[in-house]
Image (tube, rainbow, N blue to C red; front, side, top):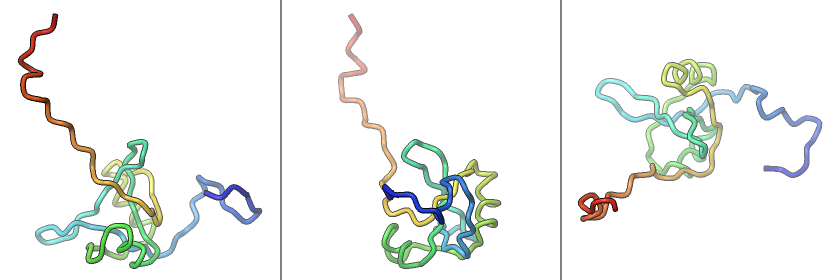
Length: 111
């Protein structure tokens, strides 16, 4: 995030065409399946990268991808609840998994 604002900077919610994107997918049986992610606040988002090396740096080398336009990515993501589009994210974290209950916690009666 930049501390200074310049006249030619787009507004945060302004949709500026990003051009063809490299979109991470999961291989399916006969097709590729769009991967959806979550923002730090938990909103579903589609992700696209402007260069394949940025995708590899974030998700790992060899991660499968397809090329899509921004409008095509938005059209595919909307039915899945992905109304946000994140371009060139630089950080990913593994999904949060629940901590299993300790043995005996469920068996102890409340007093």
